Structure formats: C-alpha cells, structure tokens
Length: 170
Image (cartoon, rainbow, N blue to C red; front, side):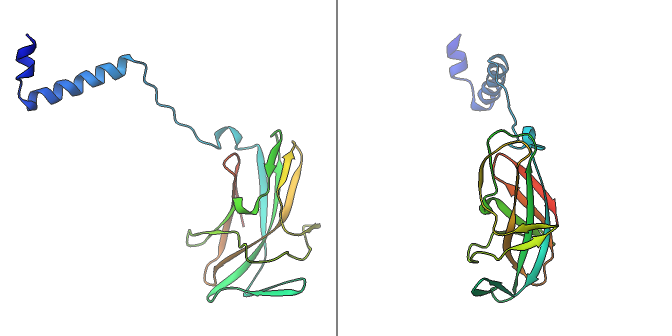
C-alpha cells in the first residue's frame, strides 16, 4: 500500500502533506501568544510634558551650543510619576523620543551639556536623570533637549523603557 503513495505525483502529494501538517498542528496543542510589553503597565507610570523653548542656540552655564543648520533646539520639561510600580527605574534621557508634526521621531540630543535650572509649573528643573528603584507615588522631573527641523512642530513626547510606555502631548 505504501508503494502507491511513494509513486504518487507531486501535485497530489503536496496537498496531502499540507493537510497532514494541519491535522498534526491542531492536535499537538499549538498556541499562539501575542504580548504587548505595555499592556499590563499602561497606568503604572504616567506623565506630562511641556515645551519650554525653541531656538537655534542654547546657553547653559558657561557654554553656548548652536543647532545644526536648518534645525532648532527644543527644550522640553517632563514630569513622570510612578503610579503603582515597585522598584521601577525611570527617567533615562535615552528612553525619550520627540515626535514632530510630520510624524518623525527625534532622539534626545546628547551633544548639549548640563542645563541651567529652570522653573516650570512652579518646579525647579535641570537635566533629567535616572531614578532607580522608584516606588508608587515617586516622581521624576527634568529637562530634555531635542533638535528638530525649524519647520516642524513638536507634537508628542514618548517615554519607552521597554517596561513602561507613556505618550505625552506637547
């Protein structure tokens, strides 16, 4: 009986192999799992952000930086709050991206030195820094600088450290 299947033309054998694979997959308990790294942590961290200034130069203490040709520096005040996460490390500047009006993402500008203190919403801010082991109720606040095209408008600030994701309108 097997001889008959071995000599079967390929156009008949392939559908039989496909059907056999489907039957095998359905009986072996195959499970598809879809995960979203933020699904269970959507409200663990919240935040707000505000554009403080936009300019082609940025003065900080004793240095002045100039944006690349055709770009502006955008200084953003950010306020993150740990709502219900235990030992959450928050605030790394490298975990922030700014989305502009054209939909482009811009990363934190690492070429700018330390920023001078600035008061925003009654809070004195300087560079944002990592706050390890925050507990529910803790806040992380600071200033970030991005370079974006002069004709672009900042729209949202996105914090994503692969454990927590917060999108803040500007």
